Length: 422
Ligand code: AMP
Ligand code: GLY
Image 1 (cartoon, helix red, strand yellow):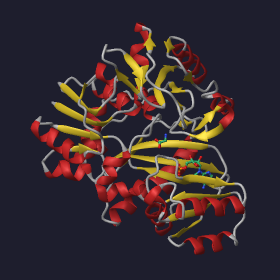
Image 2 (tube, helix red, strand yellow; image 1 turned 30 degrees about the horizontal axis):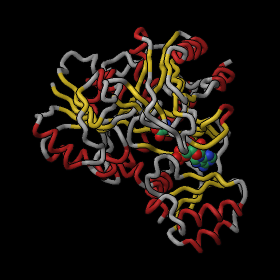
Image 3 (cartoon, helix red, strand yellow; image 1 turned 90 degrees about the vertical axis):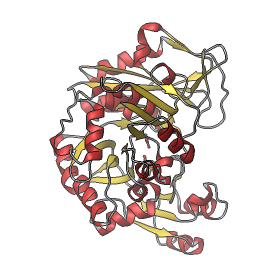
Image 4 (cartoon, helix red, strand yellow; image 1 turned 45 degrees about the vertical axis):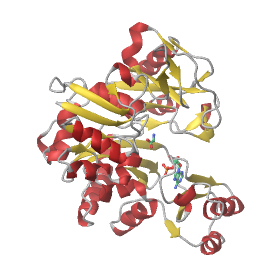
């Protein structure tokens, strides 16, 4: 079978490495892929948002199955376009991807179906938003409605700061059209847990839980990033909490999407906050998380491709989704300066014996076929072990065997989880 994977980050590298374990797959094309993915798949220089070219490529190359990994093409409707050409896909249709594409939609969905989340109001009028803030207390959270590369969220410590945030989104348009509508919501406290779940629109099979580290620097300081590292499983996600989540959040969400005529198939990502009043949804993503996928898929014992096909065909109930009873850690090595300005083009050396444990994100091949840095998050070093402590140690020993100029990484990935687990 010939597969196409849309995307070109560490997440896609992890997906491709897991897919390759299936012997029915003869060829994988990555669009656009990256310099590291090129070791595992045939990279084709078509961008993930270039929908027409992707469809044309898929048809011309007789692709049997497509995996659409990033948010943009999902929200833009790539799955619908490929389906129209008779190509089955892993991922939601445009109608269902709105669960990530519009925060106003997802908040209204949760309100309508009693799914626990932070209290909120939505606004498309700046004056009304400012007037509302005068009735609230800080800290308070301001979110741009549309996709903003994970950066459209401002946690304001004072009401004055919140008003500035509203103005920057609605008047100065710092997130472009994403700021036409905004959500103002209650600040929630508690540990965060990411749960990715496979669903065929009928049943939900959650994957092992994980914990992202979103801030750039140690001790959760610095700017928000796409994610500087992950561990799995997340010790805050106990069996009891998992049961509550299934009953109050996961199944109600799938049922709500069905009732809205927006059946969700693929991977639904639940960003949860475990508050003192129980778990609440911070956000939904319509896709695998990055870098959550880099710790979740290496722990998957069942065959990824079989599960993906089952989500498409509606047979997930009878398909095994089994994870190892082990822990994983991913340390992201970034270009110094990320998520702001950074230099690129530095040669990356990875010792031969650990290549399998490196998930490449922002790197390309130069004209000498050498791997060089080309993005903010360059790669993730991932290892697994029987205990979380050992997985962390092993991931950091991999980091020592990887070199490039201006490399930056957090030294405390998993530290908080380790404390919580004791
Ligand atoms: P989001 O893009 O919605 O995931 O938000 C990015 C990050 O902002 C989350 O991972 C949380 O750490 C934080 N955040 C978002 N909403 C809230 C909230 N209501 N209360 C506290 N923190 C939040
Ligand atoms: N790591 C968070 C995300 O993928 O959105």
